[in-house]
Image (cartoon, rainbow, N blue to C red; front, side):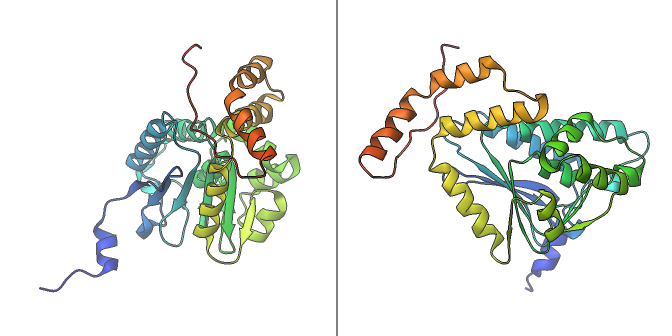
Length: 269
């Protein structure tokens, strides 16, 4: 009996967001390659559920968000959207964006090909954006008659500044990877082996103090949106660092690499 080809199997498979574990750095993959990884309503729900589940895992040190095949994501699945549904879709995207931005450990976007519209909204919410030279970015509410969310604008401003944010939002223009790197959207630009670079970065973060990393992420997010780090946040994290500080300082004195324990939730709070 003739077996289906890979292309046919890809076409028959349902759009999904897969979760793959690799030690302490799991990968979420947007998987709808026959439609340039456009995000359906079910895929948005799946991604949010994965993030909600992973957020409670104290052994996770970083996660990678990527797309299957040649694209990160072309954004929303337009075939599911009409004028009546657009507000609900926008709320879905705000919820997903906040889940990424507020995720307790770094989220690394590994981007190739299209990162357009809603996909760019999610990518900007990630902590690092590692891209290859095929990456293309556009933020497109002006092409659809939509109003970009206020928090998304604040986050975009923190990444690229006022001038570049205006260029992106007012024109909806598509940027190549080099231009996006110049504007600050791209954190690291690689010629080859995007997945290896993303995995290596996640591995580096995984080797660092989970308390230091989690504290830095929360405080940077607070400062980028609110303009300052609340004093109670600084105090809470400073009180939590004792174990990791002992490990790091001892390893430094012994001239060896520190091995930090997994993060522990303070049950006294």
